[in-house]
Amino acid sequence: MVFHQLRQIIGDSLFFKSFQKFYQDFKFKDASWSDIKNTASQVSQQDLSWFFEQWIERKGAPEIELNSAVLKDNKLSFTLKQTKPEIYRLYVPVEVNLPQDSSFTTHLWLDKPEQNCSLIFDSQPEQISIDPNFDLFRKLTRDEIPPSLAEMFAQPEAWIILPDQCETGKLEAYQQLAQAMAEGEEQLAIHQVSEVSGTDLENRSFYLLGAPKENSLYRKISIETETEFSIQDQLAYLNGKPVPGPDEVAIWVARRPNSENTVGMIMLGENKKTGRVGSLLSHYGKYSYLIFSDGKNVVKGNYSGSKSPLIFSFIKE
Image (cartoon, rainbow, N blue to C red; front, top):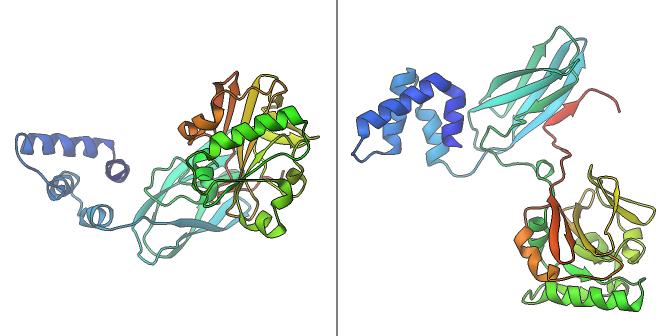
């Protein structure tokens, strides 16, 4: 990311010339970050001391915000903020979507806590996105990262909640799955729906075992919607297709609205085939959803919808 940001600031030509010269000057020699800084400064004819100081010598990462995005005629006004006490000098990418699938991209310097910006166009902008391709080294907001199993794994003292409205044979399959998941995990406790209080609902993350019609807790909680995943009429859908199939296990992760808590949902097909799913989940931490068929993974992916607070749309849905 240091090199990528340097390339953004001085441009491709000077970036490659800098490292060609650095290679020639220090081939078969010891070299340091200071030597890279001096070479890049010499080639670009810029004082880059500030750049290497903030990215090499300083701890942490900046956080940025988009505020007060206002459109008046074809003039777009907005405010960029840094929320950390230690201020960085940032070369911030800005992308504006325009009518007829056209777009405008530029960079703006942000080197103070708050900066007002404005851009004027020939046509009315439809959307503004700040750093849409993650060119800056910065702390991402939670909404920029799709929920994943790894987020569920990180939840302290999450509970596995067994279904309370499914037939006995299937309940036994869910119990075996829960035991496989909890094996070796001291904080991962297995509970019945009747043991979950209102306080637990508010303050705890869960693995909900069972489809919506099999676990009554679905009716007591709300979850954020995603483009790929939805629950309708007591059924779960992936890209519009009801799942799981007879031999499948469907696994989803979703966040609770206005909460730090996460819900993992695990649903078995009618043939109750779990395979080694309970012990395999730890290998799929980066994914938002999984489908296993007859014990083998056949679908894995992440939600595509962005809820980034650094994106503001002027189109009313």
